Image (tube, rainbow, N blue to C red; front, top):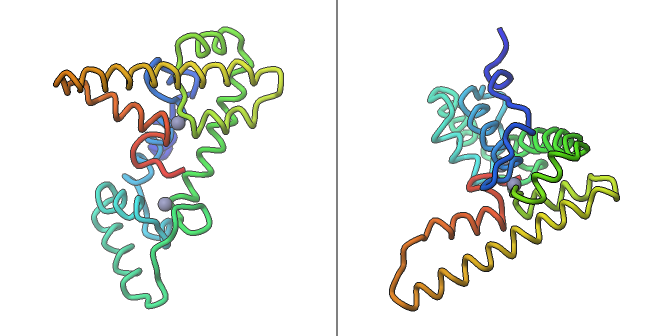
Length: 190
Ligand SMILES: [Zn+2]
Ligand SMILES: [Zn+2]
């Protein structure tokens, strides 16, 4: 039987949308799926974010075994959120590399590139990594997309502040979108 993590994995080019970074979405799906099937041997060292992912999403027995092992080990200490110090971050980083490469390959397609350029969204963190992997002649398009996303967000935030001065505090969802643009989706450390 194929592990579920495989069957849930959609091609990156099918998850581009106007409102979310496709790398973020792919990584969030992967993180959820991996946590759901996590085995104790797969996670010995973990950072703050991933301790909470384990606590909230891993099978209860796996989570208890992972935490018990850490508590019993007097040498154990919390890991920094990096592939060297957290097993979960390490696995996420491998997945991110695979997804970035897949995305960069997809961007060879002019139609996709143009659509992304005109309508798509990519967070700053992953956008920069995509640019670094792209051949030089395809970088402008991605950089323009990032500039457009930032300008649109700046405009939205300015309007939000203006409305706030008039006592209208609705539309706070845009603050989450601003955070996503700046640092990737919530709970994605890599
Ligand atoms: Zn992203
Ligand atoms: Zn981690």
